[in-house]
Image (cartoon, rainbow, N blue to C red; front, side, top):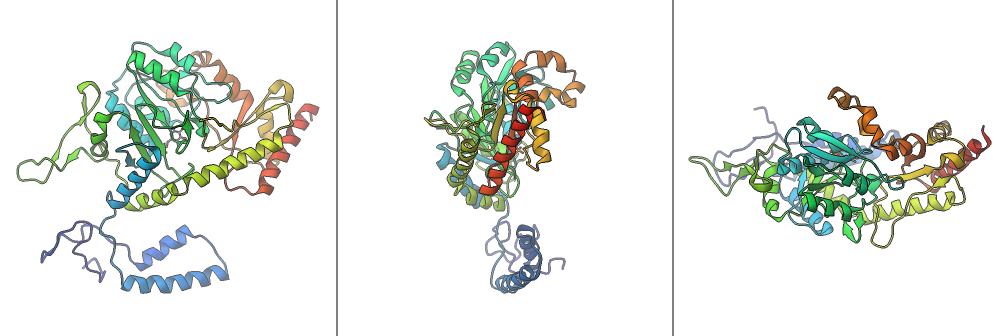
Length: 441
Ligand SMILES: *Cc1c(COP(=O)(O)O)cnc(C)c1O
């Protein structure tokens, strides 16, 4: 017997009822010893007090193990469904799907659109590589829209210039959780029959004109990777859609296209293609999430408003400390239906007034021990694109604002979880650095 657990196993993973020989042990359990390892992983520490507390917990966990059952399901069940219900309620959407990550959501949206090699997808020049990864991987042409100089978001006017008869998708990214100007983008999409996929990786809980970010385009995909505002044990994503016909397909698109409402001869279910745009069809793969992730997401959605408020307060405090300096352009705090999530604090400098560009400031801050967030670069500078034949210089020439703001003007800072002393130190260091730059030292 490989499985030494003394627990009842008949309803583990699959409920096979009162059968004498259950369909049991299809997967292995976690025992008390494993759980202690998990607790030590989640609650790191050392020293006498830590060891004593751990010992006490250990005793109780082993006692609990004796009088408890393992969970019946570890993947795609009630907790995942509850997390999705909470998301739908919070976002005012229907039929969202909890996936392995945000990039998986992009993939489903792209497959729905029926993207094929040669189709064009417009993404902002400044974002994370994930925004372009799937269309790039299947041979689409990525077209880079220049950014707005203040928000760093995709500039709708440049999107309009870059639409061609081959454009099949536009991917606005709410960078740092600041809302993209969605109305003109949706208008362009309507005129040209283009699918809009919102990269809402930073934007869970933000609003544009009073509507939740990620629920305005045809699709919206959120990330719960460990560095985002909320997480589901390090990885996770939610995909939403405003396309009513596609909603019933979302969960099948997550899990191989299995359809339990249909059966093939002598078997329990059928596997059918997923219905895409304009009568198209596609084959689903597997982006299933675990029950633990579902639970983890529920816990954090429950406090999302408090998290955003704490981030807003920290950003407002930094603004108040930096307000007097004429060489700085501060994070926009929104208001009037515009609600950023404050995932990142964006600071810009005016290189002329500061007497140097942001690269100088970044160097000075690093010397003072102030960490900025390794922010998002122009994607067209990456080697992967050069290898695929993209001409960096030619693309850069079509994105003059991107070139200017990235090299000379902006950087991002973390704000969440910092103490007032740390925020003050950050503000003091920024002001001192600008002062040094102005004096040329
Ligand atoms: C993190 C991130 C993603 C990808 O999210 P995953 O959940 O890691 O797939 C996409 N876009 C942006 C802008 C991101 O920062």
